[in-house]
Length: 485
Image 1 (tube, rainbow, N blue to C red):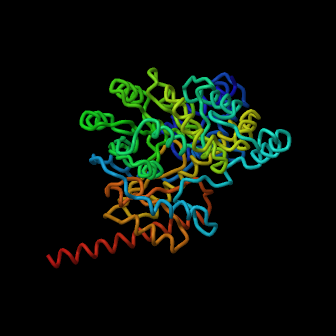
Image 2: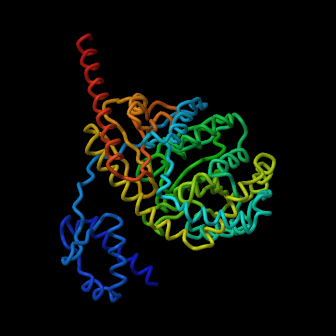
Image 3: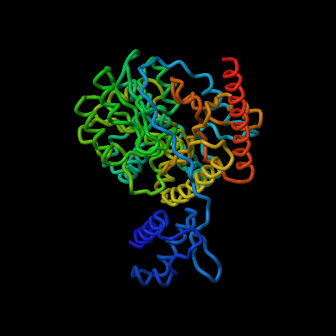
């Protein structure tokens, strides 16, 4: 009960700060005053204020009280909604492999691949569980665990799905080698080579690559960086094209960070159910929403077995353990067969260690910590991009996760920026890899899952300088072209 109270108090005061009731530099109510107003203990108020401090909204001043933190306002506009593109066969892949390869280099500032820094992962706790599993349960840990996977882990995931608003039984969960295998199994169960699927625009570059490997065609549906996929455009596309499946992320989408409202989620599920089009939900950032409890997974609104849910612990526990899962409804038997005769299941040791870690009870505490860190990091990145990048740069406002989508002005070629940044030891993800069209060539995605420090700020500043240089060159070329004309 106390936990709920401090969260409610923190949320209400945060809303008041965002609405301007308390201006930067102004003092918020004292601990004694607020505890009297709310009828709660001093400890509850202090816990609420500690939460707001972690979010960077207030700061304590010795012998004075708590004050609204004075930070520069984020005034840069958000990128516009993408435009409609016809279906296409996927062709891009080379630069994606390069981005992933660069993320492993120790001498590179890894702002490209969306891989969280080891500083934000519970490596010590995970190592302890790995040691216990291999020491006390070695026979099972070093043996096969066939599909659908380790039952204690499936039970823990079923418990966690309640937080996403979905009530499922452990028997409905299939453990996979990360979220990518979950997505692959779903698409293999739902489609054949040459089929057409719909996706967000821009969309996760791993999905773009996966569609190429499976021989699928893709139609990109315009997506708003705030509200998510356009239901109106999706409906028109479904009327015109034989779409076999939709792949979508409704919470902290990748790469733009969009989060769809519950009302629009209901409409989406209803629309797809009526048309008999299955929806593959990629919810890999779902547990990293900054205001947990205020959003649900799309699966929570599925009453007709329309949604196949995919996720993993890659962004929260460790990408290396390769532990994900899929909830596939009436497609489960097909998915289990596909997995059994390809990868069998995920690594036994990883499954058992992750299950033990979840059972141990420290995961929720870890989530609270990294949500605060990622929220703070995103704010630092946003303000730094606003400060150092060319005027006219547009920035998204994600409500979860740790990735930032940036739209550059003046037709700056982000792939050229990618090449120049590599020479300075910085990796980014150019917008071209998130679509097979050319409409995002001036965009880039930044991985904010790295510690914010002077080195990180210098990297963002360097990117800004390089972007300004490219913008100046573009202007010179335009002026020359005008004179020649």
